[in-house]
Structures are given as structure tokens and as C-alpha cells.
Length: 126
Image 1 (cartoon, helix red, strand yellow):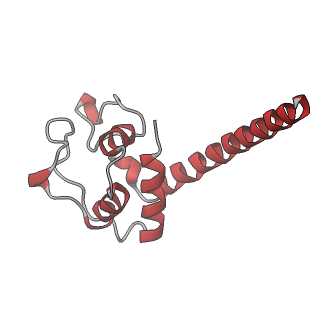
Image 2 (cartoon, rainbow, N blue to C red):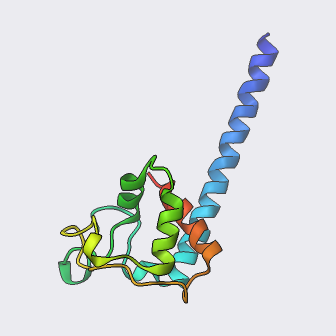
């Protein structure tokens, strides 16, 4: 029994450390994808960062996006469509929180597959 507990503990530790390395690599890849696609022009990852000249940020921080959509069915698909097609300035729930009116379409800057991958990463942020 004691050997089984030790083996399970070691296996769990190995899985946790592997996941930590995978997450760090994924973070680096997603940050590079976001930078190369122009996303970081309007968005930040962390909440509370000001926009240009001390104004409100242009677009919402991705931690705020993750919090807003946490647990909502269809969130990844909806946000992928927003990335590719843009958003409606008349139905924005970020009004008053950001200085930008709406998100422009980005299908020329990022593929649907990469947009989906980036959105899934964003939704996993804490």
C-alpha cells in the first residue's frame, strides 16, 4: 500500500511538472502569435493596464475577457467569430471600460485555426 501511494505521488508530481512546462511553452507561443497578428496593439493580457496616454485601454485585457466568458457555453466559438469578423459597436458590453468602440475584423491578420487556438488560450487565463 505504501509503495502504491509513493508511486502515485511521483506520477502526479511528474504530470504536474510536465503540465507546467507545457503551459509556459504555450504561453510563449500564444504571446508570439498575438504579437505577430497585431492583437497586442489594442489588448493586454493582464487587467488594469492603461491604454495610450493614460486613457482606458483600447480593447479589454484578456484576463477580463476570460473572467467575462468563464463557463459560458459557446464562448470559444463566439469569440473566434468576433476575432475574425469584428464586433458590433452598438452591443458592446465593454462600453465605458475601454476606449475602443468595437473590434475590427481580423481575418486578414490571423487564420481561423490560429484565432481558435488563441481564444482557447485566452479563455484559460486566470
